[in-house]
Length: 194
Image 1 (cartoon, one colour):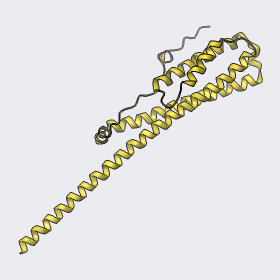
Image 2 (cartoon, helix red, strand yellow; image 1 turned 90 degrees about the vertical axis):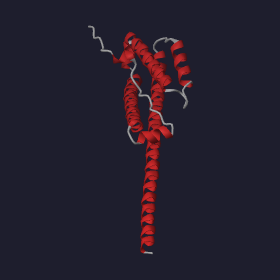
Image 3 (spheres, helix red, strand yellow; image 1 turned 90 degrees about the horizontal axis):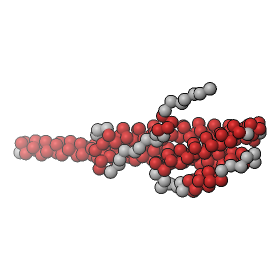
């Protein structure tokens, strides 16, 4: 009788230990899954920050363009192209499309700089100066949004490839995200000629 009671007691202890281990594994799995999903939300939020900065940049450049038009005739197709690009941006726009949009904005800004150089009286205009300051602020905001996005992508990608959370990431079909990288032309050294 004593052996039977001891056997039952040992069986209950083993069952309790197994139950605690199973509950611990389930709790860890849920925690890892929630962490991966939180990181994914941060990446989406950071991508939205890039969209906000691009929209702000578009608005500032459009206002600058309107001011510039008062002094010089500007290429109408440039404005039309930018408007078409902006209208095509939505929540389903890919990272590549966003990069292309940012590159087009860079090209528009370069063209406006040429017009500004040709019309020095434009530089003296008070409103134009305020718009230039706004564009500089917008560029800084865009750079900060890109850095935030890349930091969140780095955190998510690290969690996805790190063991043991990589097991959970694979089971919930979470994949690594692409970084927002500068165009090749911006990675090259600037040539200064005087």
